[in-house]
Length: 192
Length: 108
Image (cartoon, rainbow over all chains, first blue to last red; front, side, top):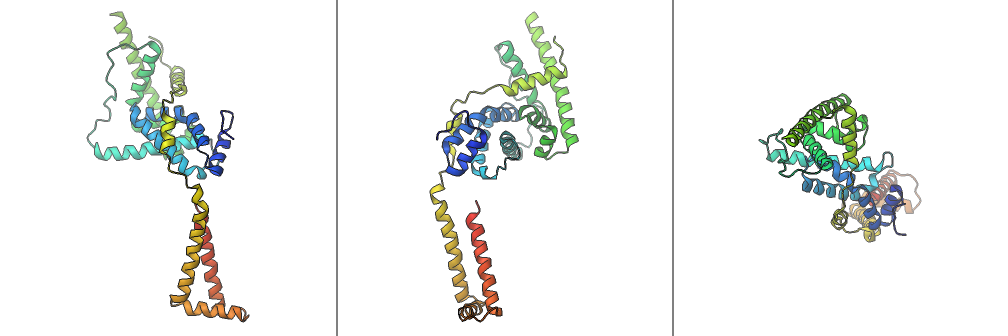
């Protein structure tokens, strides 16, 4: 039987485990690719190529380890854990090479052309998230983009619950400040 | 300038998280990066491990210093001499080998 959109994640997982069904896994990837890639794009400060490489690594690892999924958590949460681990190990490797990189340097150049308003606010948000520290960015990605509770995020990131809450508070304060600043700049630009 | 409060920021973050990214060949890329299927060899693997365990056990019984004791145990078993020390050692070794082989063969 071919997998379809009506099949649950559990049905698809069983099909992969019992029959090595690649079409079922294809449906799983199709279903979750957007969220996993979005989380990784935010974690990698908008480096889309790196995010997609890590997303591919995430799904290949999920395929190899699918028999270890215990159905105790949501499948998406399990996938996000793999994605965060992939990002963390990649970040560790890169830091060994880029020891003198400037942590606070914005990852984006300011675009010359003015994007539409919705796209502009999204890009402002992406840029603002990119300026957060690794811990703050990871906490925001886990709690807002991976839809985890603070407790789940703390467990996944290996941080105390209080630290995750602090990261979220600080990140939100920084985001509000940066977005207000971006908004003020845009208003000034429109007036002149 | 619009007010940047917590609700506004929460809404922006959640909307951004819900945005759907076009697949753009990503799924096909993942599927082609998957390792080749090992399903046809799964049964073969079990028999290879169990066979190697049995062969290893036989070679150990023939050539290891404890070998004569094991062979004596088998002889005593054949002659219905009951739970002698040699027989107990042979039985223990067989059970350990069989369990190890089974665990290895069924471990993914």
